[in-house]
Length: 615
Ligand code: HEC
Ligand code: HEC
Image (cartoon, rainbow, N blue to C red; front, side):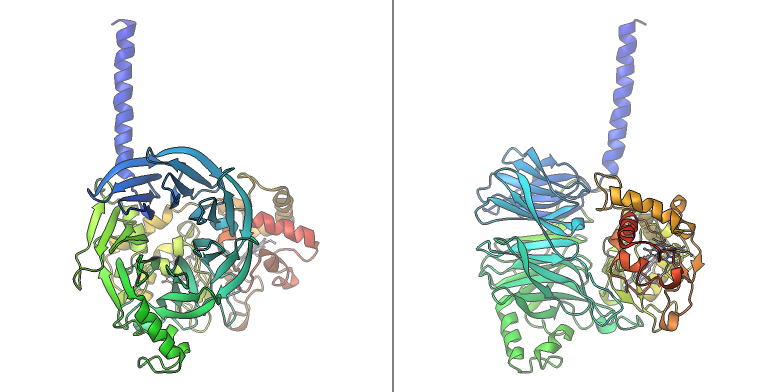
């Protein structure tokens, strides 16, 4: 055989090999549509596909994907320039960017540097400025599109996730995903920050009702008078003995009076005997008459008559009784029948609707777990037939993907009140305390993250469950009140085992900052590593009394928590009394029972905190 022939043969073998690998890869890539934007004519839908790292261009007339645009990393949101010439795509990565995509070609022509996990792009009315949420930096980035630079950031409360702007461009309304305060008190809830765009500052912080968490969507009425925020309204102060009538978690729409800059009221999206879990995207029809909400946990769209909703709210505000449960405005957030007669619940054909857009009378929903776009015409008959437009070939679900789907699915819960992700959003924390019954009643505990749970048993802060596997099965049985086959639990285990830590926003280009480096030394000196060793996810998996127990938990031993990604799960200690890391090391460490910190100077405490928050 000649040399040339050998090379040729070799090349063929390599090509076959590469092709096979590509095929295998292609088989396991899901698309995960999460957010969308629609052009002015309502003809083309641009779909951010998180897992595929692509933006699909969907021609609505033919129902066909005409183009797939590869973007820098996972896309999380899309905005279209007012003249339709560009797309701005936020990218969820530790070093986040906004990809600038030129239309109609669909070519990425630039990437603008932003913060950690950019999401929710909003353009100013003149199309000159772009605002984005830097989710894990807890700020809103302001991008000047002429220079394509992030020119300023405005600090907000915690994990800004959704955003909208008043028509005059003067104010931005930012939905903070999670509560930020201590959780051992009487009030814990997330809020909406209103930013004055000229002053580049938050001018008002609107506190939502007690237990508000997981703020996922926000929109403004076309007349600019009201903003609407979707969220979970948790009844975290009650022991988790049952689910009936929204005993644990309800789903809400909070209405903000934009001119007055205050909360008008919060209405529940559930029905008396049927939850509408995990409300996500919210949007208005162009005529301003109808509000639509996607329910990611129950795979539905709520279609709400806006005028009737406001008429009823005004009536009850005047002191008129509007239903058995609502005689005053203060009753409304607890009234599961408030929307009866003014809302339709429409089932979608796909699974896990997140972002929604409306074109005319058609509502489109990004169905995350089925790689489809759901469509419902809200004017047609009482129960319109939902359609699902496939964004790609139907994929076989792996066990891991099944587990992810189940974790987010409230169909598996008694009366669909909640999914696992209702308390563990993004498989992490809702930043609330819950009085689960596994360790007795009357001793609420902070929700724990699912990250590394399967590698750092026992589970629960008390260590009462031998392993995460047991905690998963007990969660199904005693929190969702259902009996499910063992293979469903196995799938959830497999999904949770694949979770990867999110890079800490305290790192500088992926490395410890100088302060964190100084803190690393102190970490050893203060003996933190004896119980939180770096060799095993910063936990030795043993129980200790570190002097933190109070009340019924006095002198109790707790299971040493892992400190990996601890920056994301504030507040701290079993009851969430410590808002900051510094407080864990000072105020709540009497007698040096929890590491030797009393001899550290304030700057050293800061350095140590910075190190721990960098893990
Ligand atoms: C009502 C809120 C709520 C819901 C819903 C919920 N959990 Fe939890 N979960 C918690 C709280 C609170 C803790 C921590 C309790 C403690 O430490 O004592 C926890 C802890 C856990 C743990 C242990 C973590 C560790 O490493 O210690 C696992 C695993 C878990 N949950 C899985 C699930 C699964 C699976 C579901 C769905 C079937 C679910 N949870 C639904 C509130 C909830
Ligand atoms: C004797 C073992 C031990 C030592 C030493 C120790 N820890 Fe802990 N740590 C624990 C236990 C047990 C808890 C749970 C306490 C609670 O929740 O009230 C905990 C909780 C924490 C938490 C809160 C975690 C959460 O999810 O809320 C942080 C942060 C922390 N430790 C950091 C440190 C640092 C920093 C040091 C060194 C100054 C240290 N620990 C020393 C055992 C220890």
